Image: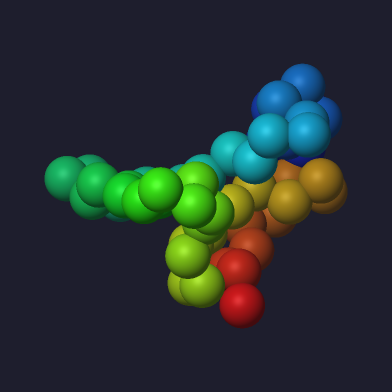
Length: 47
């Protein structure tokens, strides 16, 4: 997972459950609570 995060950088890898949809809206910003893969490969929740 860390390799995936490094390859996608500076973009963020977002973790979604089955059937979940993410709407970024016009601001194109991840909402608080979104789960992303951190640079060390761990899944983090945005605050």
